[in-house]
Amino acid sequence: MDTAITVVLDGLVFSSYLFIVSFGLTIIFGVMGILNLAHGGFYTWGAYTAAFLIGAAANAGWPDWIGFPIIFVSAALVGVFLGLGLQLGILRFLRHRDESLVMLGTFGILLMLEDAIMMVFGTDPYFAYQPMAYLGHVEIGGIARDRYSLSMVIVAGVVALAGWLILKGTRYGKLLSTVIYSHETAQAVGIDVSKFYMGTFVLGAAAGALGGAYIAPTTSVVPGLGMEVIVMSFAVVVIGGLGSIPGALAGSLLIGLVRAIAVHEFPSYELFVVFVVMALVLTFRREGLFAPNKIRTI
Amino acid sequence: MRFGPHRIVRFALGSALLIVVGLLVPGWLLNQLMFGFARGLAVLGLLVLFRAGLVSLGAALYFGLGAYSIALLQRGAGIDDAIVLVLLASTISTVVGFVLGFLLKRYRGIFFAMMNLALSMILYGAVVKNRTLGSTDGFSIAQPRFFGMLFTDPSHVKLALFSLLVVVVAGAMYFVQIYLNSTLGWIGAAIRDKEIRVEYLGYSAERAIHIKYTISACLGGLGGAFLALTLGQVDPDSMLNWVVSGELLFVLIFSGTASILAPFIGSFLFELLRTYALELTPIAWQFIIGGTLVLLILFAPNGVWSIFELMTSRKRT
Image (cartoon, rainbow over all chains, first blue to last red; front, side):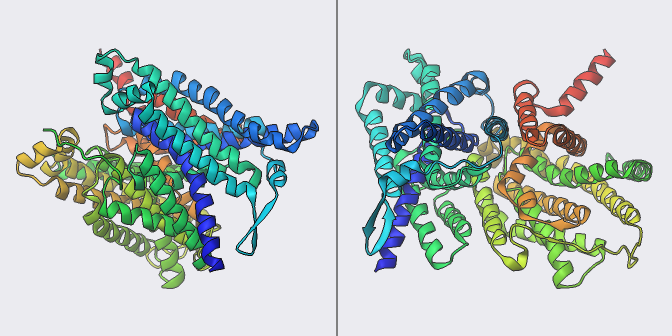
């Protein structure tokens, strides 16, 4: 029973964190049709920015709780500066290119972002444990668990809910749905598509960075942090169906729980198990669980 | 006959010339040539798929399979002849490619890329945590024999291996050229344009893709096998990780897809670029590589080959 609780909690925490990262990946694909391999770069940048600022705040003698606003500010900073910069500087010019070529372009950007980290922050690891220490522990099922990790579930819930409400309940969301359905139609009825592309990319980049920034206090922040996470979030969004927010939610829950079971039952084979699940889902649902039906054109 | 005896003679002469070049160049350059050609074989496999509009993010699966086959056959079965090892390694990856092809022939676009990614990461996830397979460190390969001979001088081993590599590269180019100029090869371009029209013409797009996938698996395995033999070791992060697949695709775009010669020239140039970038700034070499890729995609999407062609066509006019 205790093991079951541990597996479910571990799974939920990991799912939440995967969901935050995958949310960004899936909305960028949904709106712009770009499979953004550079997403791992946003994640690493978010982690480094947060760790650096939290460390600086601690050195300046600021209270530990300040770490929480810093995490969100870091994500926003990365989203606005990196996201906007890349969209305006590079991706804008690739809009009408072949999707696989654009995907490779984002691979180039990923390599650049990974090295830019080392140029800016150096190669030494960063630690930012203050927010985690501030929240302390809580006992669930006889095992002490840190409240910080559990708070990730709440953050993921807020991201999912906010994404859903904006898309379904606001004017912007309705306009965005038009852009997703057909950017040509959207343009024809007078929607400024490039503005929506820009906004989506910034939001997606910020979500990727938020994943990294929120995980930063729980680990040592080192170069190459984003490379493993990004393949996992590919698994998530592809399992769910690219471009679908409920799909990303289902995908992260599935992957998170499967990974937690693997970690407890067959330790060290978690990567193997995650991709077996991905391959199995793709075998039976070629385009993922929540993929919309497509019309075959001649 | 477009592929008659004179073409074989040309390929043989070209190979002989290259082997002579291998004799003359300094050791470090020979290494770069070998890395370039080994990777070039895998890139040629990606080119065959790319001509049909398919991009795989899991090329490392066959690349790593070829490399680990060599290492395991040598360690486990005690086979130490380079030619037998290469033959067996390419057979293994071809068979795996053929079997997985039944599944993958149904996928297109991003889903083809992703299914390949999943399959390659399954192998990576298995190898990286398996102690007998060397985990993240990999393990080393003993010096191979050639026709039963064991060379004592390492530079002779290198040269023998290079000669074998050149012969395999020439053979691969010859057969891929014949294939790409056959009806089945040209169907690739038609599939890329509009698959359903291919079906209306009475050809099976899925069967054509299955063949292309198997060819690309065979070439990927050959590439990995030669890289392992050249390096004298195997390790998951430089042969099996998804970043390797990305790098191979990078080289494909870097080289251009217009000619079957391009992957080899492009891979060699890429090796040089990587070596110089690494020497210039150890912490920013990936930045240089990534920046080159972005610039190429922005300004020369048809690769280095297109710049080359542009230059020669200007000369002609």
